Length: 218
Image (tube, rainbow, N blue to C red; front, side, top):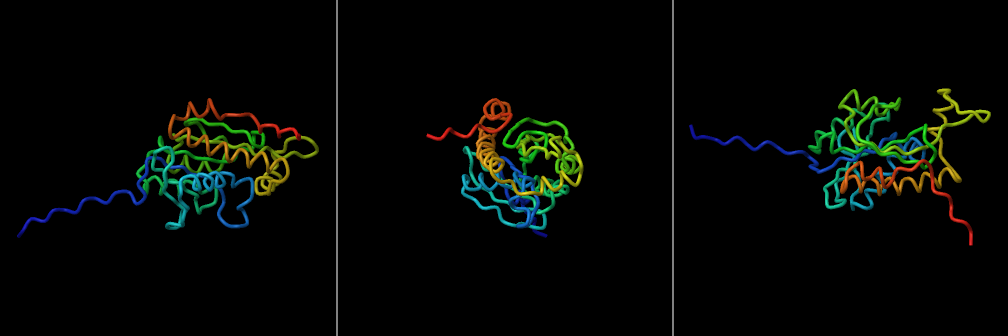
């Protein structure tokens, strides 16, 4: 019987140097809500990378492009935020990336609207999306947090689940919207810096406690 060489194992479907995941809820009804600020950053990065995330399988939209000379897979899960771990696990398999080469962008209640914080590793901080990712894949990734602010009732911060849910699933407007739009652009700059210089350098350049003041009218 003639010897037959075994076929070479197939590589990752979307091979990339880096995986960047923005957290948010799928569907048009959530597209402009505070909880989807991670999706907004992915949309901005996709424009810069010359790609458009498209639906693949049941768990994600994914697009592969180039940023800072690196091949980057940009992912928006099709799962709801509290089930993000399923999408991230599959994205790691499909891209061949490790958690150390993964960036997750998400909203943070306990930071002022427009604030940005970058760090490697850490806990889940009570964020349901990070809890899900931690349980499914681990927490040793780079995270980019964007502040959306905590809602208040009678001038006091609220932890009431219904008040918080209404806030994170609400659509920002006015100064709140301006602060988040600016933060999305700066967070995208920060992700590019992570790819080229690392998380520590990106944190030194882009961490900020709140939005920049609006320029004075001339």
